[in-house]
Length: 431
Ligand SMILES: *[C@@H]1O[C@H](CO)[C@@H](O)[C@H](O)[C@H]1NC(C)=O
Ligand SMILES: *[C@@H]1O[C@H](CO)[C@@H](O)[C@H](O)[C@H]1NC(C)=O
Ligand SMILES: *[C@@H]1O[C@H](CO)[C@@H](O)[C@H](O)[C@H]1NC(C)=O
Ligand SMILES: *[C@@H]1O[C@H](CO)[C@@H](O)[C@H](O)[C@H]1NC(C)=O
Ligand SMILES: *[C@@H]1O[C@H](CO)[C@@H](O)[C@H](O)[C@H]1NC(C)=O
Ligand SMILES: *[C@H]1O[C@H](CO)[C@@H](O)[C@H](O)[C@H]1NC(C)=O
Ligand SMILES: [Zn+2]
Ligand SMILES: [Zn+2]
Image (cartoon, rainbow, N blue to C red; front, side):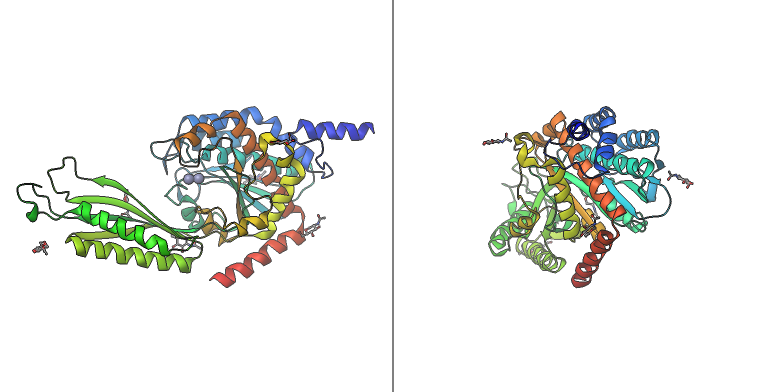
């Protein structure tokens, strides 16, 4: 009875609920190791949030993260896999399988950490610390790899790292992302394509001799309008979006001669995305023809859809419900779907990530956690939410859940085989 009480107390102390199942021999020490470092992790989180750096410029984040990981006893490689702001931190006790986590830390131009990647950074570090504890002190065999993956927002850092071999020798890639709800990532994310599109016309006085001009803004507007009309025929999982990033017009009495825009197209399979992209080409060509301007389209992003892994998603969900059941605590509640299966039914969270590309190489998941409030990702309100203590606690819950999911891959051979079998089946059928 005394022992049981003590055990429950320890579960409670490490952030678990009293009702939680504390039978798993790894959960207590793993969660305690993460909790013991909470002050350091909170400081790291704040440091990254207060100093937002955009794609490939994450020098400060790279420094504070690698210094911290070295202090924690990881083998750290700075500027790893060919990128100045990426890193690799490892801990191995020889033999066994390898679990890998991703830490992102890039911010968005102009609005800071509006995607909360500061939280992804520390959730990854927490997960790695947790698995290291199990490897170092609790007879688990294997290796944990934490990859510092820059430039998720547009730059595709993971794709460059993938090409440089970062994921060659790992058995899975696990990560988590802040948002508005808990999410186990059983629904696929979308394949994403982006291009720079510029319209070039000819400037002229808009009153004196408009007939001498050719209007680049009209080129953009007609393409925008054709897309808006076409959207009615698009499927629920398909997206086209666009923004003007540079227009030469500053005064109304000059016919704009140059517009630079960025266009994106997404869909849940490569096949349907390719159909959508063909349509974008047709639309911009038609717009140029109709406005007698010239158009230039240069693609620069190709994130593949995320290959879902039911076994990993279910294991993550199971761990989450076992240790941190959000329905038992209104402060941390907020399921979009209260079961992974429903994520598929509801069409899934339709964002995209360079983690999609990683999932074509190894079994992978990108789960989600809510950070309070209702501001959506990429809104300045989300930037504020991402800096709160509450958001940090949610990130730690997710890091612990990731750690236990990684431990399952290391200790359970049947499970490790299962995730690869499922991966082979899906990747085989999609290629
Ligand atoms: C760190 O790296 C060295 C050199 O590769 C290796 O011998 C050692 O086993 C590694 N230590 C851990 C804990 O992974
Ligand atoms: C289109 O622009 C060219 C100059 O680039 C001009 O020669 C031609 O007459 C224009 N066509 C129309 C229909 O205005
Ligand atoms: C796309 O445009 C951005 C500026 O908005 C530029 O930095 C980048 O090099 C362009 N990419 C390509 C492939 O032209
Ligand atoms: C959560 O809130 C609902 C009402 O919003 C209440 O009925 C329920 O008892 C609360 N649960 C907990 C565990 O506080
Ligand atoms: C190992 O994983 C398999 C497949 O998920 C599961 O059925 C089994 O119960 C696990 N073994 C243990 C000891 O948890
Ligand atoms: C991922 O990204 C690159 C483009 O950046 C693309 O060419 C490649 O085929 C994609 N897929 C995989 C599995 O790497
Ligand atoms: Zn984002
Ligand atoms: Zn993001």
